[in-house]
Structures are given as C-alpha cells and as structure tokens.
Length: 244
Length: 244
DNA sequence: GGATCGTCGATTGTCAACAATGTGTCACGA
DNA sequence: TCGTGACACATTGTTGACAATCGACGATCC
Image (cartoon, rainbow over all chains, first blue to last red; front, side):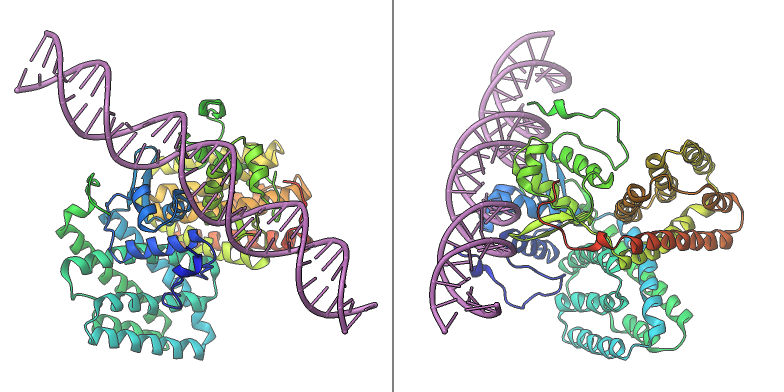
C-alpha cells in the first residue's frame, strides 16, 4: 500500500505543520486523534502488535510514534511490561489550569499592546464558530472550537516556545473534556461562561482581562474536578484485557 | 554485550529518574550529554548509522532516542534528508528567557508562602556549591550548578508540569551556555550577578524577588544575545560532512 | 555557456524475525 | 486454606536486511 492512500486531506490541520510524508507522522496523528477523541480511553492498554495491525504498519514506526506521544504526556509506558493511555488525576487538573492561567496571561501580555486588528477579527470569527457549535448542540465540535479560541491568543503572541507549551497543555485538556463528554454527553462549554471572556478580550482594561482569565480557569478547574471526583474509575490501574 | 556493561554508575543523575533498564534510555542520556556538553555542536549532522556504530547499538533504539531528543527540542530532522543538532537563534534566546521569567516567577509564588525551611537550607547548600565552582574557575561545573540552583525553585514548587517545562528550557539554556563556554572559555556565571538573586530569595519582600528574577533574566538574555551576535556561524545551515 | 535531465551515492524509512523481561497462573506442599 | 515456587504466556526490546527518497554531480542538448 502506498503512503498516499492514507492521506486525510485538509481535515485536521489543527496541530503544527504536518509532514504527512512518513508513516510515523501519520500514525502519531491518527493515534493522537484516537486518544483525544476518547476512542481509546484513559488507562486503556496500548499493545504494540494490536496497534500495528490496526494501523497496518510494522512495529518500528508505531513504536516511534508511541515515543512521541509519551513525550507529549498522552501515553505512559513501563519497560518490558506495557503501555497505556495516560490517566486523569485531580492534581493534574490543578496543575494544568494553574499553569495555563500563567501562560495565557503571559500570552495576552504579548498580544495586548499591539492592538492587532487582524487578531481581533480572527478572535471574533472563531468565537462565532464556537457559538454556532454550542447552539447546534454539537459537543465534540464545541470542545475543539473552545480550545481554538484560546489557542488563537497563543498563536497571535508569535512566541513559538509558548505555543509549544500550550500544545502540551491542550492535549491534556482535550483528554479531560473528551472523557467528560463521553460520560455526561451534551455538556460542552457554556455560552455565558465564554461571553465574559470574549467581552474582556475586546475591552480596554488589561487588568480586567487578567482577572477574567483567572476566573475562567477557576471555573474550568471546578467543573473538571467535580467531574473527576464523580468518576473515580478514571484514575485506577489499567485493566489487562481491555480492548483497544 | 550485556546492557549492564554500559552502566555509568551515579555519575550523572542530573536529569529525571533514569530507568537505565533499556538501551534506548541509555542512548538518550549519552546523546543528550554529548550534545549539551558541546561534544556534538549545534548544527552538526547526526547520521544514524554513524551514531549507532559509535554507541554500539542498532538503529532501532537509536532512532527512538532521536525522536525523544527531537521532542525535547535539542535535535531537528528533515524526513529522508537528515538530522542535526538544533541551532541557536537570537529569537530563541528571547523566547527562552521571557518564558523563563514567567515560569520562575510562578514557581516562586508557589514556594514563597510556605516559608519552607528545607527549601532555604537546600538553596543555601546549592548556592555554596555554585560559589565554590565559580571560585575554582571550573566553568563547566559552574554552568550546571547555576542551573541546579534555579532548578531547586521548580522542584520545591512541587508542580510536575512546571518542572517539565523547566526541563525543556533547561536543555536549551545548557546548549547556549555550553557554546558560550566553548567559544570564550572561563566565562561562566558571575558571582555578583547571583548574589543579589540569592539575597532576594532569602529576603521577605516578594515584589523585590519578582523584580530580581526579571533583572536576572535581563542580564542573561543580554549576555547570551551579545554572544550569539558575535558568532553568526552558529545559526547557519548544517554543513554536510562535518564529523559527528 | 547555460539549462535540463538522468544517474548515483548517502541517508532515512520500513519491515519481519528473534531475544529479553515481567506477570499471572497453577500445581504442590505445609 | 494459605503460602511458594516453577512455568508458560504476553509484551516489549533489539537486530539486521531491504525499500524509498533526497541531493549532488555530471553528461547531454540547446
């Protein structure tokens, strides 16, 4: 089979620049997507032979793809024993959101003084997309669109290292929200929670924006924590035999 | 050859917990050390066959090790073309230090309210080690010790994600300072630059500490930028044929 | 002389077989 | 019944060979 047979046109140009040139790059994407979409849930084992069969590649490229996802924090492995999707803990939630508060504030500090009209227009546009998906009741899309709105701030900062850091956080966030969606369904981002964020972003008061970011994160950590506490199974040991 | 033959006892327990159990883990360490020490300078090609021979392993584990270093930002690769050590640019320096200012301030925010005596004692200890190596004129050690002093703040924060972020920044910083040392020699961290930092860390005024962090980073970016501008060759294209 | 095309070497990408390790199971004895 | 030891199985780690691709060099044609 030729590599080109696997090409998925412009469907998901969400992450970084995508080479698409090698099998490994392909698998990284597909596997990441499968994990983030909750297709392979947290704690589920990732057996190399099974995955190599599923993706129709040999174990070489697959292992390299796994290494990359390990480095991204989405996958955990124990030598000679096994590999599984990263699990969710309450401490992680606190860490993610506290760090995100710092990073997003920093990102806004970079963008704010520039009074960038292109940024504002794009922010408006992405927010409209988000609102539309919320109103349509499409939770899967809403989660992604919400992250896209926030992601714009990092992109606009022009700070590559900061974007990289956001990318790492984004993946874990998606892991949580996907689990949340899978458990409760129809409980994506709320309109009003985001309205105040956008309003502040378009305002003139930077301190108000900082406060709004902190508030937004507080709400996020609250929701996610409540969810996790209601699902103690998610941070348990991976069960042998759960099909991937 | 048995894996145990490669064991390097407690020589460099600098980075994370070291499994030592697999060849791959070993190579990641050795390769990272070779890069960070400047043994393989920025821009130099990393040919898989040459490296696999040098480290006496096959290309499989070596490639996986490379993947990990790529994810850490120390190595860059182009499919079907080549791999080389990451290069140094002035923008990178600005990004690293600006992000580090934010992260280190955040780390101190976590540590400060606790009035942790163990932290203060360890800070004193590591600082003494640093001073000793500076006075001894050992630049190589001084660079590492200086990073160790700062690293303690991240460790004491107890924030795993923050430590992870610091680890990524730390590697790049080491890359710069190693190149700096190699070029100029005998120009490691200065005593007086660090004295004010430590003084503030032991003081009671948190705002003063924040200002000191910002100052410290300003000095760092200034030195590093001046160095880079004096060595334009470091950000050039990798030359084919440079031995690794 | 300059541009273009093909060839060749170097390098990375991929694969399938084999080795090493850890974990659970099951028989056995106290 | 409970502990214990050996054994088999599942899984990852490692290897060497082969395929695909890229970049440079040189021949050829205009």
